[in-house]
Length: 552
Image (tube, rainbow, N blue to C red; front, side, top):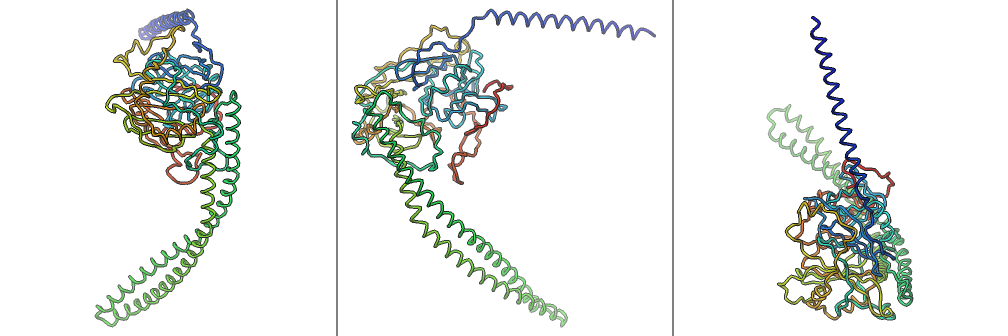
């Protein structure tokens, strides 16, 4: 009868032996892993660093898993990155920085931390600090080393051009007659401008200063810029005054609209009551006509009398409600007419202010072989478009980005840099290629200036359009030439986003279709909402933390 307890003791001893052996094995494996980590060479965040001024261009290489930042003087710094993994690839294409937030969190991936976030699309593609496993691993963003992202953050401005390429490539200086040259300073004040839609008249434009060109070395241009900015500031004062007056008139309209709406509801209620009374009267009249006995006739005569009385009362109420609505509507219309001059004056003042403000910002020009048109944006808003002629329209022209880095020749010319995006090879998804690590000696090859120049040779821009573009060129302006049309990501409050259709675009295509409130705008129009899944304008200071997803 003692066999069962003895067996249990044997099992306990045997289990303890197994647990101790497993623990020893795990400890040995952990020690071996720790030794491997200690034996690995230290990976520096920055591969090279010769940058000396503000960042004006960023190039991300998908193949080399590297980002390179360039300044106007030709300096650069680069670091390893982790782009979008398979099915969530960071789309190859042309972007710009739309928004910057030092502390940002994803609202989809477990509130994952995205420190030093620099947004590239409103649907959620961004540069930010995150984990770097040595290969593409994100859900579409470009993760950078934390210390590198922190250092880069104050060096960039909203509006900086960002190019995502498959093969790494460095910008090369280029000169071509098609590239915009500045109008002489004295002529800038009278340059023709096309008004943009007015936004935020109360001075909440957080990106306004971000578009200011760097003119520290060009006193003449700085003076001209200061003059234009002074004009814009003066126009803003007038616009603000007009907006304030218009708000008062709009409030007067609102004050009259509320009584009119109440009167409208009262009339509808009275009409519904009259309809019900008329229905009861009609029912009683029919019943009376078909009654056979004196008792039934008496019953329906009384019912008809009550229904007739109710119908007469309802008719009187309808007439009174209609009269009240007529009076309320007359007051509303009078307030609307009285406000019309103030509202028109506001719209005119705002248009003049926007025209003056726009002249101080760099322009972006996009030429599409697919549409055979030229498009212009300034301050992240569309300005105008025009047809262009591109020779050999059936022949691909490639995708080339030309950036105005600085003035040259006494501010009578502009230094342009070109970056061309090559097409991928068949081994795009090769595991060996995607997981390889760079040596610090790897440097990106220069863009082929001859090929970029040949693309410009094929384009003819109407003289009046070229003149208008030259009147608005500042350092930071850009020209994009591509086989592609602008992406659907090119929308409100964006620069041009151009995606290469031959490259995987999982990082954008996998974005959930959700709408979020855009707190930077007011009202109930469609513009008050944006498409995407990343939080807009999140300003709360959250502690930086890693989640199950790492840093997204």
